[in-house]
Length: 122
Image 1 (cartoon, rainbow, N blue to C red):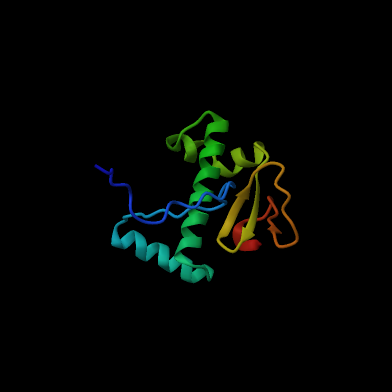
Image 2 (image 1 turned 135 degrees about the horizontal axis):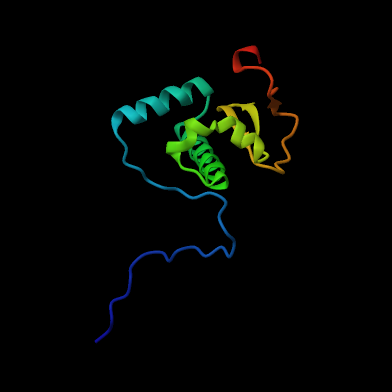
């Protein structure tokens, strides 16, 4: 008897690592609406907005880990002061205020924020 194998085209093996991957998420409708509003305001797709949100979350978690802290202590210790102390720099990007890690090259498309001015004065 002949063994039945898988039918269809085998996966493509490119030999190189993908820079981006697709994922499928199931989220509450009100969360999607908030993301859509932010994406619309920033002039980007839902995918780009979620990607930026994840990047911001990773930055916040990195800062908290560097402080040896947790989300509960965030307000007490002052996020901005702690981020600056660790070498993070704020800039105004297409997704609002973003914190760049130490050594990030930045560039002319970044608008660096003056630490002595409030967000309204910028």
